[in-house]
Length: 345
View 1 (cartoon, rainbow, N blue to C red):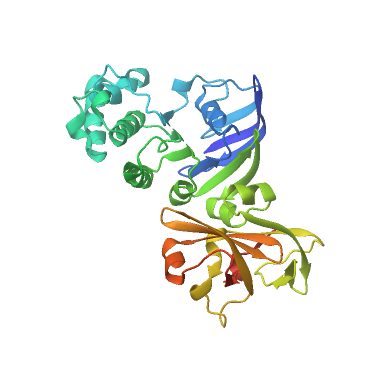
View 2 (cartoon, rainbow, N blue to C red):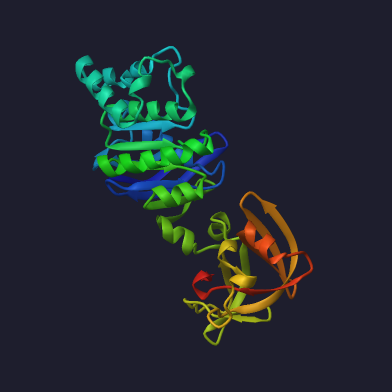
């Protein structure tokens, strides 16, 4: 268990302010937030690489606030791998053994076991310059695991990988977490990555922790305009409750949860909006007609901007829908917003 209480960090031109956070033993926890928000600063503070101005950090009830990094019982994996270019993969993996009083024989045995588990046994005699990005990250993870850490810290471990390797290493991390029971704390910018790997998480904004909880709740019930926008709910509007619904312009929208405030915000994700032939009006409340303002095709999906009585609504649909329905700007289209997709705060 990691317990952070009233933590403050003061650096030139940046600070972490009064961070309070508890991460359960064996959890896969992710830190999210915009670039420069303080995610990596918090991770490196847990690791002992940045000094604490005030507050405390405990790992398994042991206060490690002033403890040197190598005595904290954790390992860290960076996005750039941080492998020593002049050492072999095997020597990179066993490098930390000397600081943990792990003898050479035991270190070599553990390195071989980890290399087998991570499918890099055939690479042990190579140097990092002869490895792919995915292979380098596997070697970096093996080095971190060799010292049997209670906590594994991951600073954007997949961001430098090609898409073809990224899913492979995601699956690997998920498997390692399941098999070892180690507490994982990961910094990431990738929402799919966070949702696939993490159980719990927190969002940091400008050095302040503004949201924490189950990762699915953070994405599905954001609780504030900033969090809603950050997690991709690009449709955010002011609205007002009315007769068990909410009024957005000229529409009364049904939703699963109500709010008592006279004024509130409504938010919904662009990919959860139903368009055109996908729409069964008999089964879809919150149905209305809008005008297509713009269509932007990219990759496998297309962004369709709609206009409803002066309100712009952004949708994200499969590319084939644009082709199959021959959608074009200026055309009218039926639209529905499922009640379960509407979030109020």
